[in-house]
Amino acid sequence: MKKTALLLSLSGALLSSAAQADTLLGLYLGADGWRTSVDGSFANTDQLQAFNFDDKTQTSYYLALEHPLPLIPNIRLQRNKLESSGSTLLDDNFSFNGTDFPNGTQVQNRADITSTDYVLYYEVLDNDLFSLDLGINGKYLDGSIAVSEVSVADGLAVQQDFSEWIPMLYGAVRVGLPLTGFDVFAQGSFISYDGSQLYDAQAGIAYSLLDNLAIDMKLKLGYRQVDLQLDDVDNIYTDLSFKGVFAGVEVHF
Image (cartoon, rainbow, N blue to C red; front, side):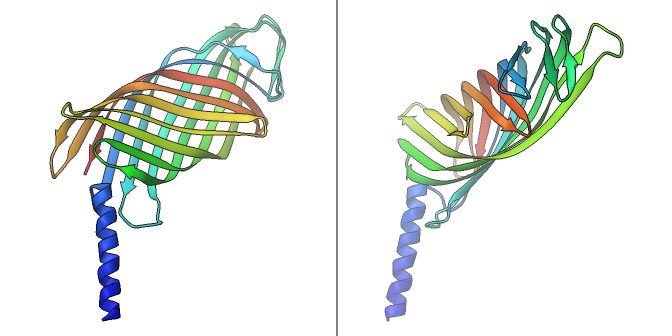
């Protein structure tokens, strides 16, 4: 009898959690196109050299799995490309990865970074009007920075690769606008430590294009900014900012 009562109690708790999450198991797939303006500087020391970067359309893909099991966090995986290149006339002598570029040299500069987020989070609140997620994000940065001389045939050229795991705090909030099909949202990750500071934040509005028992589909429009201030990561120092408007689609099964 006691075992039966315990089983019923656990079943009730699980059903209650499932009701709060509006689903027994939710799979979210999304993709964004993000038009960025890029500003920044980099070097092998904290004496950074400013470079020009062209505007660039970036891509972002994500997958999230939500469940009603207590204590076990939900998971979100996201992959982002952060890349841009440009042409810069050096206003000072610049040394990078053992190669010296004298003052007045015209160089082609390039940053090519892949950012992968591994987010574990809890749904603190979840209903049609308001939701709040809190968790941690293990961000893995893997990329390269290159500089090459463009005014001389077979001129100087150098590239330096780097990679780093970065733990970050994660939060997301959504507010539904009743009877409209729209909701507003904000989401971000942040960390500051040992001279490095990184944040990845976005906010926008979403519209429910489909909403039925089989599938939900939302269209999204918003603004996103990623700042990478790295302090001696594989001998790389950066102050790079990617920001601009994005548009995307999210499907919920």
